Image (cartoon, rainbow, N blue to C red; front, side, top):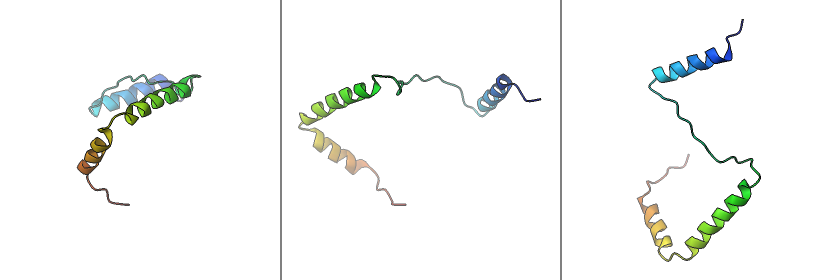
Length: 74
């Protein structure tokens, strides 16, 4: 007979805890909701507008790039 789902889940969680991990719950926006894409566009437009009027942004980004380690191509 197959192991009940609840027992398999319990065993898996017990094994994860034994490995030093703990469960957490994270709530994220529902990308399937009706207004999700429109809200993404709205927030992106706000960020783009703020970036456009920030005279120090380009220099800041250039300085940040200098701090990144060189990436070797695969």
